[in-house]
Structure formats: structure tokens, C-alpha cells
Length: 60
Image 1 (spheres, one colour):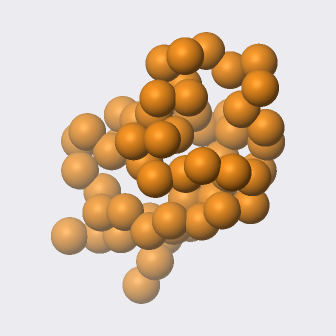
Image 2 (tube, rainbow, N blue to C red; image 1 turned 180 degrees about the horizontal axis):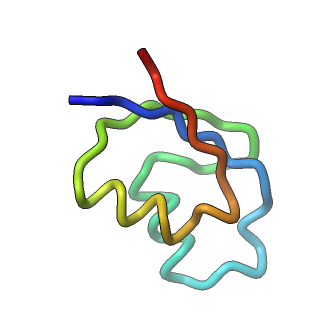
């Protein structure tokens, strides 16, 4: 499966509870923290919900 690197670039203050829960589920807890996750339909949906708070890069 493909992997992506997700980095939080904006603060989660002001985000909804659902968006904060998505960040935590992805394994992101603070600004400038990066995680690598496999792309599945579930993770893809979580990323789309918090796309304004994170950057996404493809990992080779």
C-alpha cells in the first residue's frame, strides 16, 4: 500500500471536536509533528476532514 507523511502545520484550537479526534486518531498531537500512515479509505477520509490543518506528502 501507499504511504503518506502527514504534518500538522496549524493549531487545533478553534477546530471542532470531530477534527481534533481525527488528528488524535491519525497519531498527531502537536504542531510540526509528522506521522507516516498507509492510505486506506478510512485514513483518506480523516485526512480530508483536517486538510486545512495539515500538509500531506507522498512517501516513496
